[in-house]
Length: 368
Ligand code: OSB
Ligand code: MG
Image 1 (tube, helix red, strand yellow):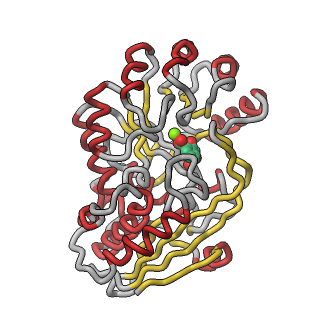
Image 2: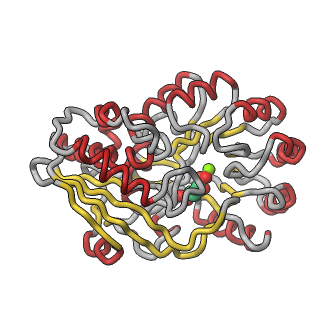
C-alpha cells in the first residue's frame, strides 16, 4: 500500500452537555480528523484524541498537527507499506507524541482492512460479534444530579457505571450512589487527583465493592501505585500511566495494577494496543478500552479493538448520542442492552459523512 494523499481537518463539535473531570470541564470538542488515500483512491480514517489543552497528557490539537505535518506525514507519504504494523516501526524515531502517531496509524489500519475486504476487527484478530460497554459520568453539581444520571444510564442498559471522583467528591458521593444502586457494577476514575498521602481516603473506598479505581495517583507513576495496591482491596486500574508495552510490563512486574485501560491514542496506535493486550492476557490482567470523548471515527476504532478476547471488562465506548446531537458517521454507534453490534462492513465499518464533516471543519490541509 502507498499513501498518495493525506488530509488533515481541524474539526469542532458541540457537545450536548459539559463533561467535568478532576482537571476541568469540556464544552466543545476540538480534534483532528485524518483521511489518507491509497493508490486506488480509497480513503482510510483516523481520529486524534488529543484535546484542545494539555490536561490529560502533554499533547494538544496543535502539537498533533505539527507532528503530523512536519514529521509523520513526510515519513509515510508514498512509502511502500506491506502491513500497518510497520507504521509503528517507521515512526519509532520520533519520541512519544503517541496520539499523533495513532491518528495516522489508525487510517493505515482502516485502509489495510479495506484493501483486504474485511472488517477492521477481523484484521486485528478480534472474534467478538458484539461488545459490552459501560458509561463514564462526569463530576456533577450535586449528588442528586449524579444519582439521577446513573438511574437513566442503568435503565438504558449500560453494563457498568464509571463515576469521576476527586478529593471532596468521593467517599460520601459513592456511599450515596451505593445506597441507591447496591448491585450495579461500579467503578471510580480519579484522573490522578490523589497522592499516596491520601491513602486513608482511598482505603475508605474499599467498602463500596468497586470493580476498580482508575488512575488514583500521578499520571507518570507506577511506584506509588504499587504501594497503594498492596494496601487496598479495590483493584487499581492504570490509565494515564501506561504509554507503551514497556510501561505495561513494568507495572505488571511491580504489581502497580490489576487491570489496564487501553486507549489507542495514549499508547501510539492499534499495533501497540494489541501488543499490550497480548502481554496482559499472558499475565491474567484483564483490559478494557478507554474513551476520549471521541467522534464516530474514534469510536469505530475502539469498537474494533474491543473485539480482542482479553477485553473482558466493559469499556467507555458509549453510543454516539451520548455526546453528540449528530455524529459524523453513518450509521451512528448504537447501544442496545449495553451492547454494540460489531459492524460487518470492511474497514472501520461506518461511513464518515462528508457533508457534516465539512460543516464542522475549522481548517484543512492536504499533503501529497
Ligand atoms: O480518564 O477515561 C478518562 C474523558 C476524557 C479524558 C479522560 C477520560 C475520559 C472519560 C470519558 O472518562 C470517556 C468517554 O466517555 O469517552
Ligand atoms: Mg481514565
